[in-house]
Image (tube, rainbow, N blue to C red; front, top):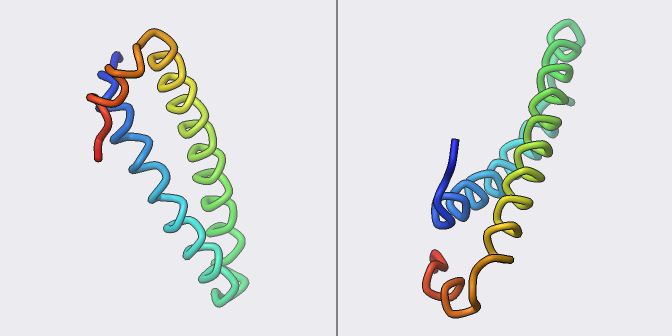
Length: 80
């Protein structure tokens, strides 16, 4: 699937915000009963690995696009 540069920036923003969700969940895992905590930690670690993989791929795609763009194009395509 191909994304536009602006879509990649939006995905990057979303993935960056998801980091805080994972951080909050890691804190709540300590308060869980041991019976549920093991499965919850396994699920949390899996989502952390997926998050890291997605973030790396999106960052690489953005850098690849930026390498082919002029500074003016990058500035015009910025989200904010």
